Amino acid sequence: MTDDPIDFRSIDPTLPAEAFDRRVAQVRFAATAVMARRRAGGTPLAQMFQWRAPLLAALLLITLVSVALLRTVREDAGFDTEPGVAVDEIAEALGTNSTMGTLLLSTSTSPAAALLGEGVPQ
Image 1 (cartoon, helix red, strand yellow):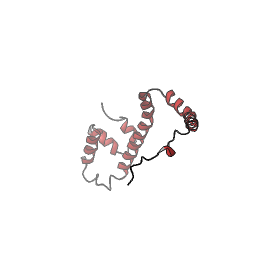
Image 2 (image 1 turned 60 degrees about the vertical axis):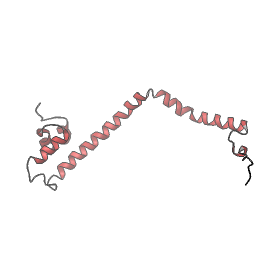
Image 3 (image 1 turned 30 degrees about the vertical axis):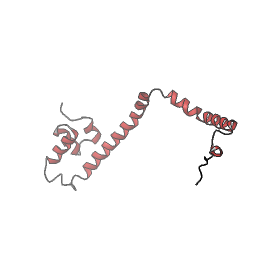
Image 4 (image 1 turned 90 degrees about the vertical axis):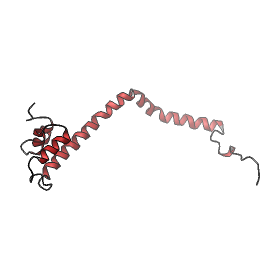
C-alpha cells in the first residue's frame, strides 16, 4: 500500500480557468430569462395566490364529479333501502344540515345548485 496523495487536478472543473469562466457565463446567460420571470412573479405569497385558482377549479370539478357519481350509484349502494340514512351521512360529511343532503341526492336540482345553496332554507 502506498501513502502517496491522489492527484485530483485532472477532474477539477475550474481548470483551465478560462474554460470554467466561459461555462459559467453560458449558464448565467441561459438562466437570464428564467430568473427574470421569477423576479416578475413577485413574492412567494403572490405565487401562492396564482396557484389558488387552478386548485379551486380542480376542487370544484372533483366535488361535482363526486356528487354526480353519488347520484348515479345510490340505488346500487343501497341508499334507497333505508330512507334518511344516506341523507344524514352526506350532510354530516359536508358539515351541513340534512336538507343539503336531501338536495344532493335528489334529481330535481343540479349538483352545482345544491352545493351553492339553492333551495336550502337559511
